[in-house]
Structure formats: structure tokens, C-alpha cells
Amino acid sequence: MKRVLTLLAMLLTIGTSSLWAADYIVIRVYNNIALPVKVDTSDGTYTINTYDAVQLAGNITVRSAYDANGNQIMIQGSTSTGTNAPTVRYYELTQTYTSSTSNSSSYSSSSDYNNQRPRNNPINNFTDAAMNMIGIDGNGVPYLGVEVGYSHFCSNFVRARAALGGAGGFLLYGGIGKEGIFSKNGPGEDLYWHVGVGSYMTDDENTMEFGFTFGTNPMCNNSYWEADINGGWGFVMDARYGYFFPYTRFGIIAGAGIGVGFPESGHAKLLGEYQIGLVVKLFAD
Image (cartoon, rainbow, N blue to C red; front, side, top):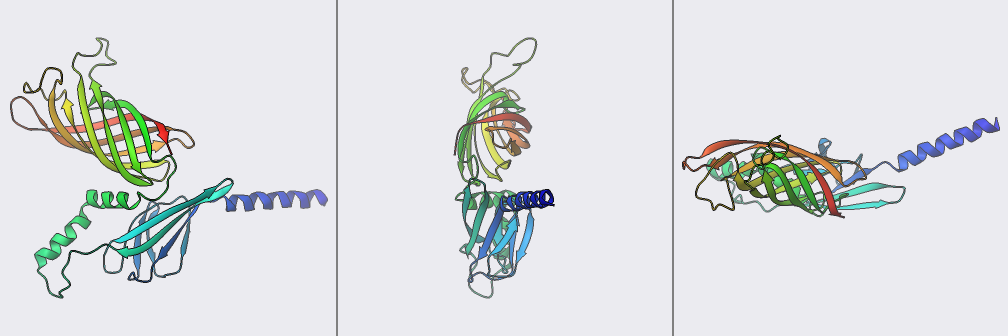
């Protein structure tokens, strides 16, 4: 009987420890915000109908929030963590962004359409959500790293990349590329370059990114460039998904996009983009 009681005590202790170690988030809506509030998270969309603090279990990030009138809400975030303790993320929905809509009860349908357009643009929505998460702590961000891989636009490339922010923020990157690195004939003589800027959101392991990349590339041949630059030039916009292995500095990123190139003929051509790469965080928070 004593052994049975000891075993039950051990199981209860393990179960209690597991529950205690579970991550969760706390969302609090300020009383100047019109209810109900729609909150877009990495775990789906939640509707909040109270000014009391709401707790959700899981490693969840809040991307954006809108009040009952459709106005986007400013989000202030912070993170609490410790040894053998859960990671708790606090999100405070403080106030709505200043609206460009007139206070007059009557306005033209065209102005209403223009005010609604940015909200319906997925790239703008993503960028706004990423900027809202700059001040929210995340594991492994900000960081400075190195990425190697293959891109249809950048060829076999190596680039430096920096994530500036917290659970969301800006991306800056740039590097060089060569064709035929792994071919039996060896790499070509031409060296291509590229630079880019973008935004990202992360839940510590998975990362979503949007990027705008500009540079020279082998798909367009432009004689107007100097000989040491080589290749035509163009730009692409792409979406990328990344996975970083837990408790390491290594990750895999893949993406696809579309852009425009400018060959020596002077006629622009449509460019398709796809890429995959390995990332190593050299300096990370």
C-alpha cells in the first residue's frame, strides 16, 4: 500500500509539473476599446467580449486585432519566462490607430473604399502585424545570420541576413551568387549580387516572411552593366516559410515569388522565383 501511495504521489507531481510548465498567453482589452474584439493569432481567430484578462494555453502569438467598428488596435506585448517555468506572453490591446476617415457622418463611397483598401491588402496586413510584434520578446530574435542555398533569381548564393525586432519586425539581407556550383563543368565566371528588405513574424520555431529582392541575375543579360557586375538586373517579391530547430541556431527556409527582369533588349520580362536555403544564426538574443 505504501508503494502504491508513493507511485500516486510521483504521478501527481509529474502531472502538476507538466501543467505548470505549459506556455500560455494573457490578453487584456482596455475599456476604451469597443467590444467585441477580433484577435488574429497563430492559432486562429478569437473573439473577446470582456475587459477582463483572457488566458489562452499554448505557445501562441497575436498578429493583429480589430475592435467592433473594424478599427485596428495597437498591441503592446511583453514576455515572462524562467527556469522550469512556463513562458507567458502578455498582450495589452491599448487603443485604436488614428483613422483617416472624416468624423462627418456622411462621406463619399470612394473615400470609404480607399480607407478600406489597405486593410484588405494581405501584404499590408502582414507588415502591420509584424510591426506590431516588434516589441514582443521571442526566442532567438533579433539575430544576425548567414544563409546558403539555391534561388532561381540569385543562383547558388550565400548571404548575410539580419532580423531586427522581436516576435515580428524587419528583415535586411544581401549576398552574392554563382551558377553551376555543383555541375560537372564547375561554376561559371559571372558573379551576381542581390540585396533585399522584408518583414517577418515568428513563434520561435516557425517563421513567415515577405521579401523584396533587387539585384543582377543570370536570367537577363544586359550589356549596360559594367563587366565586374555581370548579368541583367531585376527584382522579385516573394513569400517564405522557415523552420528553426528547437534549442539550436539552425533553420531551413523555402519560398516562392514573382518579379520583373530587364534584359539588354530593353523589354521587361516576367520572372518566376523559388528558393531554399539553410540559415545559421551567428549572433542571436
